[in-house]
Image (cartoon, rainbow, N blue to C red):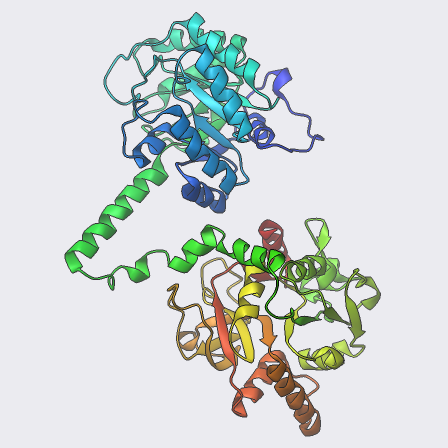
Length: 556
């Protein structure tokens, strides 16, 4: 497969750390591999683009205008667009390349636009060589183009006004769209490149990419080439790679998908006069809260507001070796394997600390000397190889006093999970993932602790309270499974007393040595002690093998 050539001056030194969003976009644009950025038009859609894994966002002028209910003819002012961009930038950590239309006027307007974009950490702007006010490229024929020298002045003004050295200015060439031909497109591209454009965007409204590829061959990599394959969408992506394209913009599909979905839902509710038919087919309100970071406010409240009650202490069970991780755990337990520069256990402890839990006791076992983090207490299960989780818990029985959390030592989760668990009603509350069976969540042959509850997860924002646990076991039938126990339990002071009493009974009847936490919970329920389940929907994982470790690094 062909790779695109690069001008020597545009190759980034690999040793330099990427700091700003503009630097991230520049790295994507200059990388040898083909890059992709996805359209967004407000803070919510920008979050969704980042959540999907894209490395950059295209802030589409068409999409932002349409979302405001106006035409893509500069009917939305540039300050209204800037307001939308500020929300998008604040909501995400990936770079944004904004569709700057014509620059909203002459060189002076471009200067002010670029300064304002840099202030809001927008990574780059794309301006097109048409006249202000612009008309969408797919409306009408043979639209007039700007004079080359005048447009070069806009480019120079933009580059002279940027306050971030890595800020990207892309010059969009409309010569093919307007029927001026390949020679004119190349002439303009060369002039714009000399004027300081970091890349050129060559646009076409034909159903094939032939004229795009002809341009790229003639251009021969003098600067990165950006494309928007809205019309020639059937062209295989491999063809873009083979023809030296630097970046592909998926330009308006989130907006169009939203229009389709909103029309369908609105029409259905209108016709059926009920929500019953659509409620299970759309995102839950709880997902909405998670997407906009409602949990961060909960964490902030715990940090900045006076607590209504003391934070619970925590016991972390981290005695096992983790043999499925192979050579990574030959000389250290899996709780100490590296996850993006920090031991897994340190990340777990940091999450607990962030939610106010600071009295933490870790039960060590395999290679216990390596478990030496600051600000934790340790106790040892020297018989970890012949005992189970309940035995490790018993080693920390002195810490079972008052409100307490019990956690496996090989799990990671978002801080809101702990905040919600601490706030949940009930003496014994366990956390279960209602999306336990979602595709790609884990290897299909993985044994997990399944739970059956008195009520399945509904997704309603009114359904945030815990529900009674009915059964917990790895062999529950799929049809009876409502979630996966993640290895996290909250005990009230009374709950702690119940657990300590049950530990004494297990010692007495000989069931103590190899029992695990699900065994303990099952015994408590059999004695009539209420155990509840707090549902979550993802945002956690356990690290059991190399597949999990890769996911953990992505989660971080």
